[in-house]
Length: 241
Image (cartoon, rainbow, N blue to C red):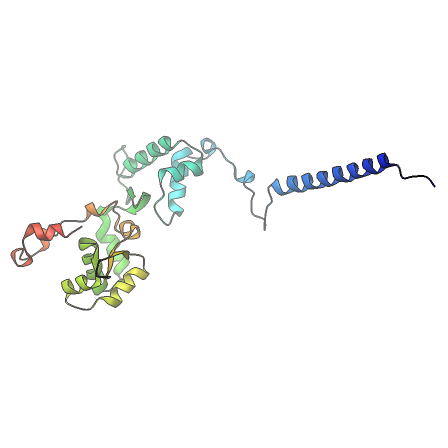
């Protein structure tokens, strides 16, 4: 009987291992290939050069802002467009000036403002009455008067507890505060030593108000009928933030 050739067996094992490695490499290569799912374009197919687009970077920035449902930062825009952040910031400043009519054109009915940590298109303040009539006419208010008053107290006195808000308004505000929290306009921001929950406004509140910070809230003093009965100007203004 002839003994098995050990060198032949070793060669066979080496060939099998090489085949397995080749199959694994082929699978990895296949997995790295862009795949179009459901007819959607691949990432490679979405590649573009902003300079080749109609209107260039200015039009591209406008297109993104038109579909954004929240403020978009210059860094986000730069990443999407493949441009330096400084160039995008210059484009945003130029668009804002153009919409205000500062570059020779007519003022627009909308403006580009930085608010809520990013940039977003808003209706121009000069046309607030027209927009307000359109929004209110034939439509129910999104927030009740009670909710608006409660939100105002939270905005000016934050951080504030429900009990403190109730003391200002003279009514129980528990359900109203829950409504404001559920709509993302207010949120829990901490607790007092007594365990009472403190509430404050959110970035969404700033976004909806078109502000960058609470410092842009209008002063209360001109709207207060009797400052002495409320402890004087210093005490009132001291509790507005």
